[in-house]
Image (cartoon, rainbow, N blue to C red; front, side):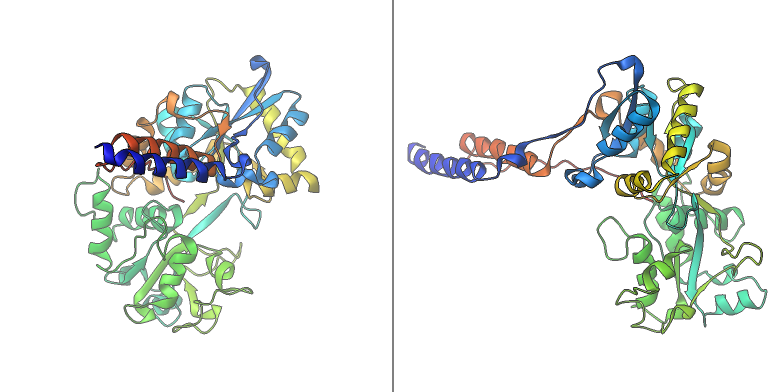
Amino acid sequence: MENLKGPKIAIFTTLLILIASIPGCIFDPVEFDECEDKENCLTIAFETKEEYKNADENPQKLADRLEELMDMEVEIYTVSGPAATIAALEYGNADIGFLDGGAAWLSIETRGFEVAAAEQKGDGRPYYNAVAWVHTDSDMAIADRAGEDPYALMAGKISCHTSPLGSSGMLLPMGWMISEGYIDIVGDPNTMDSLYTTVRSHFSEDSSIPDSGTLYRGYGGSLRCLAEHTLGDATDYISFAKDPTVPDYCGEDARSWCFEGDFTSTEDFYPLGGYNETTGEINSFGKAPSHPIMYNPDFFLEDDVSALRAAFEVMNGNNDDLEILEDVLGTPGITITNTSAHIGDYGNAIEDVPGIAAYLNEKVNKTTSDDSGSNTLLIVGGAAAAIALVTGAIFIRNSNKNKNIEAEEEKISE
């Protein structure tokens, strides 16, 4: 063993030199301001993101502005995801937090949370419509234009979904078709595995239910799955996505994949249900609510809610504040709303999807108050350097062993 001492020390020394060469700023955590007066403090649960290193996107900008408008201290409480946000609100570690539609619905049903306001979509709506996009020459589109039932023709088609838990790309269309009797659940309705089985039994074994980081993930990915139709004719494909997906991805600044297959223009993409003559919106499977601002009424009282809404009303009224909302939240404005108006019958629309409630609840129950967050966000580089130090120490003590330490976070999708 003595003859290995020299190589071990040399390797560890090299590690130290490499780490020391990393700029010192990488080791610095991003620290958000904390309230000195906890009795006059608004705490916002925010999902941690590396982009907070960018001054324009740092949520401290929003906290500082709300502090001015509400005449109280405001602090950021960092969380790792929707489950941690719900835990932070449940235990009173945060006063408000941002959740997607599915997690918001679950928190309302199981924790009694309420909606104070909601982010707007790019067109100013606090919601979007769940739509099935198909090729205009498909039998589904032809039947729809003829006033016949297009949904009965979906069986056996290759369906393209945004993700396993996407509101418009999975939950709303599946919930609607199950409740309307078009689709039968295959397997145990209380397990998520049955969702995959049900989709591939009704549609096609080749249907796309993409995981994070895969090619056909998200709205653009679902539409690309239809546009490329690599496993068959375009008329045999369905893209489940939101109503502005085609103009967003294949409009003025079209992606390269939009018109390489059987699609030659946006007119070839047809939304089943057609357009509402009164509103001009696409008739859809239902409305997916935008990310609401949630609160726990056990801790955040009516006067607090009124003060928060008044502050956002002011921010909606001037360009400087709208820029903050765009930079930090990625929204063009905040709609003042409430639980019944914003969530509406969304829960009824998705509750028939197999395993959805059990899956989301399991994720939340795994997150405790202690796990939910803090006021410090470590920069990735600093964390990597710390891991390198630990790895070096392990190597010296155990040169004949490999230890892989992996931290995995599962997120609830859009």
